[in-house]
Length: 417
Image 1 (tube, rainbow, N blue to C red):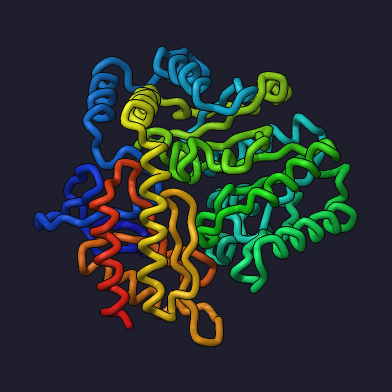
Image 2: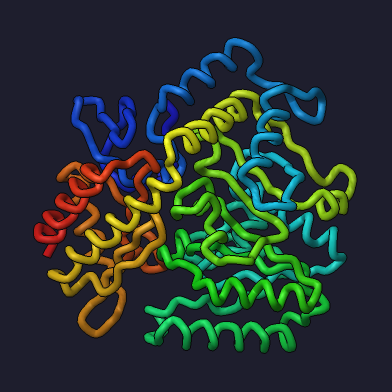
């Protein structure tokens, strides 16, 4: 008898039987408030009726139309529809299956378009587990351990994680931009750098929002040196931060390449990169493709997802409920000294656990995370020490559900103390 790989570890003890909106129901009928959303994937909640109907209709019509062999209407309609929500000028799309694939496609495009070999990524970033994406990832040693040597042509610069450095945001941003400037005249000569790759909010690295001044500083330096700016919006895109795209919290900054996945199709495997037609046309012939990319059913689900997000006002809801969630988590943390920092943007809220001397407190985070699951609230941990408990509800979450989650979180912290 075969079984799943023992390397696959489960974050919660739940054996899910079905999903309904913000809830998962296990095989014994117990309901859980799901504040993991499949790691930010089920943007419209579990089994939204509009998404289900669109997928069911498409399954009965065309499941797979391999898009470098034949073209199909869901893919063409999705490309057109994304033009309504993408930043102005990003009018050319390439679709794949996963975030990792899209990240690697963005790097391939940047290197081919500029003729430069280097990518500068930022400490704490997570960009995927495939070999190229893992080489760009420093969110935790587990992504890179035991698989080296890594892909070359990657250098890392500090990310403005103010809590970690113990400075205020302005001081941290100034330090990190100075260190980037130094990198560009030392290990990563600016004339050799194809792109900066950055998440608008560190995901696996600890749920740390990128300060607007830092993102603006990247754009300024990229423009001055002929470097492309790639925004990894795999987790921050499609409304999660309270704007349709996470980088939109920094006015006036537009990436040259935008990466999307996760919430794009409400749980169906679909990812993509967007760039200007001028830039995308610099990709070399044959460099973009894939067997399952742009799958017809996934595209139909993505079309329904966009409709639901717009018609139900889910971006505005993410902004409103995100403030409620952040304020609630901070209020709870005030009574628990081990929760040393609570931060977030929209429906991405992180609770960082530390010991009294400021060291990461993985044990306390693990206890709180497990206690929450026992009470019926599903959460995830992140950060290099797994000492950050993150809250990622679907965009459909209501004020009452946020309040219920905060109540369970408070009880979990008391139980884990």
